[in-house]
Length: 540
Image (cartoon, rainbow, N blue to C red; front, side, top):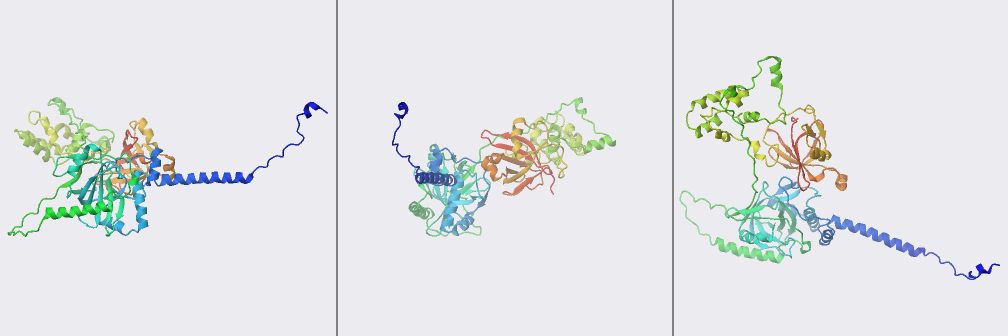
């Protein structure tokens, strides 16, 4: 027996402990429940950001953006409702349905209308201010003012119109938003979105609206102008509405006394055969547009009065060559000066010359002889239309009428032509066909002088007389995975004269037979992609 090894061996060893499977099972179940609760909690927080606790957590995690300013042509698609329509919509809702609707309205505003179901309700009509007060830390909007208003054409609807602004403009806002001032909201200038609706004890409906444009406002009988600013954060724990029940009742009592004092007793006034004209309209609060510089079209160079006037390209006399020249259409990418002048002179020839003779002293005979020349030979009107320099000076050119299509230069860069060549489906000139996912490549490399056509499915966000603003229609998987262009792409379509743009909210599909022609692609500083296209297909 080896004593060196047996010396360290224990004769009676302790029994081996058994694994506590029950304890481990309980621990695993608790961890599973914790993970499941965290998963459900994330859905609760991210899917309901309008709740105060969810909004506070998302702010700390930097997972939510503050409200942003919208442009008139890039605002979410919506419907414009007057006071009667708004009252009819919310008065028939039960308590549970109204609470669900309010949660959705607030959620859309907090999310900057990124995931909107249906159309956004916008307010239109005339409203009279009952009372206006300054916003503070105890309100949802912590800076600016809010006006309690009453609908002019419907006494059953009240509206809280919020004016978020910086503290610097508060003194001017207090002087402007006076009791009795009339607020005029129009669909062509204002986008005041409904973010809350409340049913009062007496059966009336009070809505809360905020202007998504955050523009500049002034009164029709005043000189001051103040500009709104989107709020940096929201104090959702303050709750809706901004005018609580007690404050609203006191405001209406003060407004009743104000009306009694300002109106006074009605005294009949004897009128003669001609009744007195009604008093002028009351002072109104309206939104004003910021001035945008519009570049005037460059005046074509007037050729000198010498032998160079005769160096115009002679018209082909006849034969196959002349027929081929008549059938050839100019390229849409080339913009020489002469066709532009010829297009502006396409109106009756007597109009521009009448204006010129009013500003120019005699002699008049050169003016009378120039008109028949333009009418008889339109192809050489560019070379012969300007009279001699001694008779008609150069300033005559700005007096020519500007086409109506040139008024929308601020919206689309390809506006101003108003008419261009259109083609039957599938018969357009050869070019490169791309989808919305390939627009980023066009931004980097440009059009390179070639024709580029755009196809895809689009949703109409805005429609005007001869233009429309579209958004690419993306699938749910593309929204979740952030694939494609998505909501950061805006397609501005220009239509020729006589075309009817699609209605707002409609879906437009374009394939390889009926694409749009891309004229320009711009990328803004905030990542917004503006794609300017035009309609080149003939209507069905």
